[in-house]
Length: 232
Image (tube, rainbow, N blue to C red; front, side, top):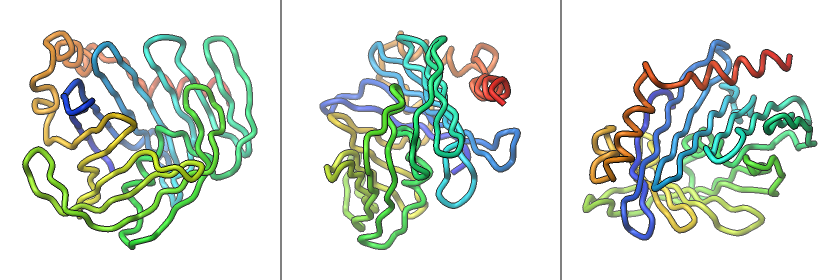
C-alpha cells in the first residue's frame, strides 16, 4: 500500500492525463496519508486522505482541492464530520462506516480474493460533504484482460452505490490496481512517471514536473496536519 503509483488517464480511448498516488506513514504511526493527484486537460485536483492503519481503514480526515475554488477540509470525529470550505465551518452527522468517495483505495486493494465477497459502507461526496448512500465493493473473480496489448489475468472488483454499478477495478496477484473504469473514463497502471507523462501536451508535462519538484511543491501533509492541530 505504501509508496508511489502512476497511472495514465484516458477519456474515450484517448490518453489525456495522469494520476499519481503517494501513500506514506504520517507523524502519527497509526495513521497513513494517501495523496492522489489527477491532471488532465485544464483539470487539476488533489485529494489528501488520512486514515487509520487498522482493519476497515476508518477515515481520520481529508483535504480536497479542485483548483477552481476553496479547498474542502474535513475531519471525522465520532458520528460527525467537521467540514470547512473557505471560511464556512459546519458539521454533518455520518454513520460509523462513512467513507469519502476518493478514499476507497485501501478498501479496494485489500478486498478478499473470494468470488462474491462483499464490503458494505456509506459513501460521502467529497466536495460537498453530502452522504450519498449505501455502497458495496463486490469481488467478481479473475478475468482475462488485455491492456495496451498485454494479456493479463486480473481480479475484478465492482463498486455499487444504491444498487447501481459504478466504478470497476482490476487487481493483479500483487494487489496492484492495473486498470480502473470510471464514469466515461479509465486509468491504467504504468511503471514510471516518464511513461505516465509520455505523449501528453507539453504544457501539462511541464506543469506536472514543476508540481512534483520537491523544492517547489507545497507540503500537503503538513498543511492538513496543521489545520487539524488548530481544531483540537
